[in-house]
Image 1: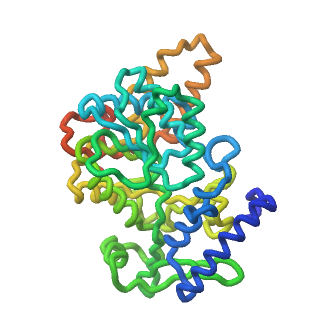
Image 2: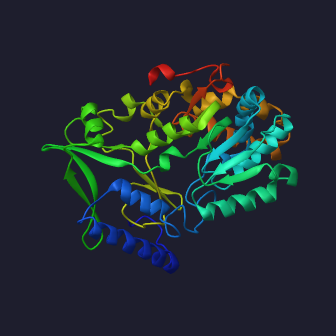
Length: 383
């Protein structure tokens, strides 16, 4: 895409290394791989994938900005929800894919202020590069007594008690592309011909076929299915002995996700603050995401024995969790402090920004109290 910034020589060399590996994988797999396999390598190939390589990803100078980077108000509101769970369970927090570590730092500081610290703050992070960034962030922002509560994990724990949280985790899980052509259902994958190209392959049996067939898609419709996201929720359900799972991400309920007019899917790439829809370029240099089908996530949780604890917009969740009260603690007359906080709150809450597109879903196990974050505006019935 001509409008995107051109990668520098080092970045191009990095991308070419990863592209060669993906090309070899395509050759080994008889000239075609699923888009899920392409996305897995583009994002997570050790040392070369987008999340496992060394380029700056988050915030100014990166490719996108996440809610914890926008303002500590996000974590402080989430801490009110976490405090409710921790007061009941006396457990720990487990964060999935902790980004820069900013959410972990702000959550721990806020929970200290609420006198409701978790026993442990576990971080499950697949990227060694991001683990290092998280460690540096936490060491910079936390006193040693809070730092002592932080532990990185390689696998999900057994019999976890407390709160599991994932912010913008589900959207980065590799998706399969389904294309309902005039000839029938196909899976759209990736081939190579002087560059990566799209190629459809008939889909006639298997789990993907059964899921796609049940959706009754219009002819010409292209969309995503993400069995791996449902698999993650099922795994979290097995790991959670008592407590709450909260996932925050952008997406829709199924009736909106697979609306007839959304006929080219939701696949999106982020490269140096440019959003575009060309995932086959700049391998390893750009984020690749798809919106979350929250109906599929809800089914995965309930099918693994969890109870649906709530589903609502990010704006509603944050307001239920006290973000406006947090903002009101700063005097509007102190413009130097108030103005940036108010602007950040606007970005987190506004329907035109993150407020409506981002959703929050919760699951519970052996946790009976109504969750603070869903006390008003719960939209579970829409799933």
